[in-house]
Amino acid sequence: MKKLSFLVVLVMISLSALAQTTVKLPAPDKQVAMTLYEALQTRHSVRSYQNKDVDNATLAQVLWAACGYSREAEKKLTAASALNRQDIEVYVIKAAGAYRYDVESNALVQLSGKDLRREVAAGQQSVASAPVMLVLASNQGKFGSLGDAQAAQRLGTLDAGYVSQNIYLACTALKLGTVARATMNVEVLKKELGLGADHLLLLNHPIGWEESK
Figure (cartoon, rainbow, N blue to C red):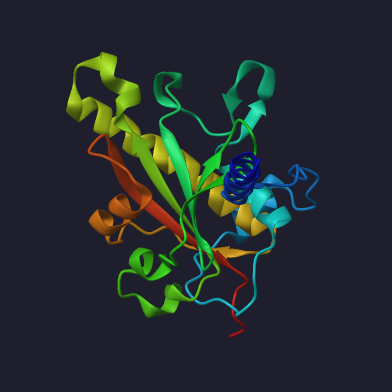
């Protein structure tokens, strides 16, 4: 009986730990007042942020715009994707840890409990304080059938650019600040995120509320 009780406790602890590793996001609110042309007109890069968190509801809006499902039944994304391979993966870096954005379940899957924002900032102190950072990686394995590594890298880079522009426009529409960056400590981040040689870390976006000038 004691053994059974012990096993039950272990299972409950395991399930609890598993539940803690996945953060379900709110359904993204797609009713935003700013028009596309207003966002294009006012978009600008922001490198200094307030000490204020970005709540999960707002983050969900940004992530959906980045590369969420625009036509869920068809599994089509908001961002263009070369050959529809959907190779771009978005990693969310916060003080509480690092997560992978799971498009299917609209959730954050925790990969690390470490604060990796300094690894993303890579010495640029002005962006190191951003409450959220998005790292864009191309899963080159999605292009395996091409048989051309250079072409796959080129396509992955283009796909990251489409997602990056979506992030810019979403942040602008939500009155958030961001900037697209290529600098980051790639090897450290890949190790902490559990990524192999088939993943290319291409861009990152610090995100936060713009600091008053």
